[in-house]
Length: 417
Image (cartoon, rainbow, N blue to C red; front, side, top):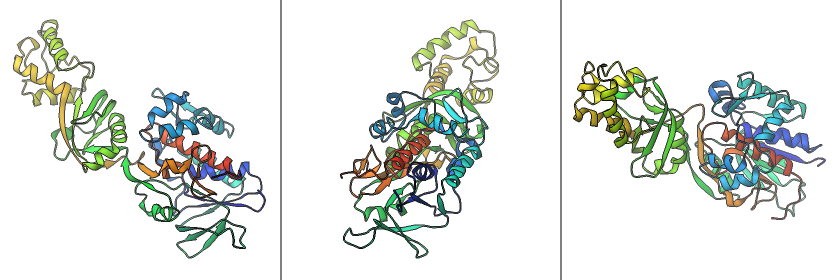
């Protein structure tokens, strides 16, 4: 590996992990990391509310791939080389301990993303990774084997500088990615159209947004005219609906929602243990069990008080009425609203901490065992630039660590394309 050079394009999680591991594993390899902005590891910084959701405590590869709306079968091959346990071990060996929260998300024990950033920067310094900031790639030119050059690629930057290199790992991602794709298409690669994933639902002028800040531990939500359905916590915001249930739904429906220009009907079951019929039956029992209690004071479904009052108002129920006196008509309307309230969604809002792109380099053109292009020898990919994306919870970072590591250790292997 003497006198060889690797250029990594992208200063995010995947790019850094590829660069530092390539320099560590391949002694004598010169590694240059190029970042077009003024910030390194920006998504690592803000992830998980500034704590960095490093990975997810899922130790079965068969289960792990189920959290990826796109690319699961591809990742099944990559995870056999590096997955959750390897991520935990890698950081632990560098004195960064991870902790697991109740929902499976894993964070550094320090509760600070700076711990992860410092670890990666320290490794880059330790293994002499050269970092170029404010350097945007404009073109990758393969060098003809018949030329006198010992390099395989010319990397053309926006400032006119040209870097010659033996290997390239493209690890830039995030929506929109179209700017990257022109110079990747020129190398013969095809692109799955990039669309945003992990976003919240906008409901302009819907009166439920007056309850912004209220969360419900578990709801079930589905999309009218579509088989998409998810459950989990839901948060009411000043613009609409958010929370894990919404983010999971947005990930699985990323392409469908894009086609409708983000206008569709979302149907929320606020009490997912019931359907409309079983809830009517339950309410009939409540009329006897808590007959004398005022309906406003006795919320039997564990819903937040202000949200319960909102439902009573929506169903034109007098809050002073007792359960025994609840008219059947209003009772049935309440059962219908609680188990299937329909919302007109018009637009989305990017979930800043977790924004992810669905789309990228077509997976059929990448060798999952090496992350090397099947079309251009010496060209590797890692992270979000490939057509892989996961739901919220640490899964996208795990893809970054895995693909970055595989690309790093695959350098120098003479592959037959």
